[in-house]
Image (cartoon, rainbow over all chains, first blue to last red; front, side, top):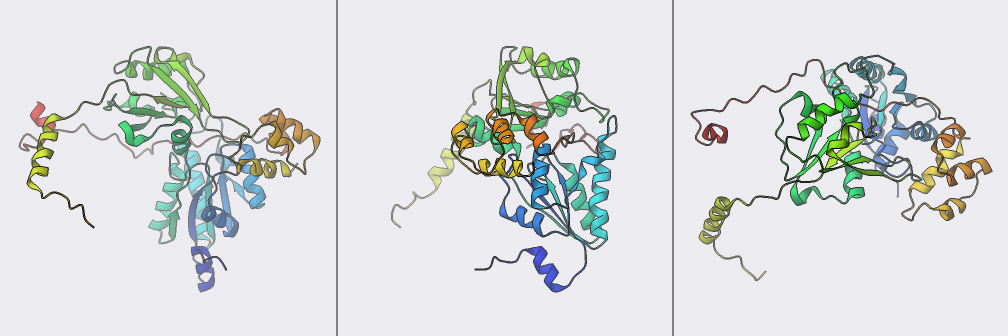
Length: 283
Length: 87
């Protein structure tokens, strides 16, 4: 049976030459997470751009599409990432404006900590082009599987690490706390790819308002190749500033406080239940 | 060597442990690729795949137009406002 036509095929059949943008995710691990929709988009687009987490991943995408264009060229030493990302968006949009069906392939999920895809889609739509994002496997998804965390159990808070340094956020220590991009915490230049212990100490100081210095912090890194294992290294919060934290290291902090039952809410729920008829046991 | 990433992708779809036996069972690779896989030498694999570009990660970066949300001011007239009641 022939596979159902996806949007790009339908557009081609209708003869429309209007540009279109699809942003897809490669997932985190080379070859393991690419979904059929994303693969189809990569294989059938007129122009494919890629940002991968590893040069090997980019080489793998190049096997799918030898003419893929890497967005890595827009990075530069000491160059503001704002400029880099603006240029990446510009590259995607210029091909859409030229009437091409464009695919942006991003590692992980195209819309998680990946502002380029969001901005490109918003700009394309604002100019009247069709643009969409397809969900994919992100580092967060890998984290849950590798670390055995179910966010439904006690809850899970996610912050870009700078959110805790730059702003007064309210963290609930009875839930998991996951901090992303700790490797660049404290960077306001937007031109560094790592900061150091002095910057990290500011984050540690903030966390010490909520957690003991001995509280464990897991340094997590998803595996991007099947021959690798995920990094899950535990350090005490007090030693975090001098730990080996890389650009792609995520901090996972287990709850430090028990859940506190809300007795008043339980009483109100009991009153509601008492006023309702008992559920029927027969179907 | 172009088949390096294809070999890795073949390993990636297995739910079995990627041990030396699984790597040894792969066919169609040169001795140097096999050695690099068995040694889990990712740098060597990158070289063999011709994938030596300096790849940077996307780092979420706020837009210059992004401003922090203003501190929330409790509504003194709203009896349901918990911050107002706490004050």
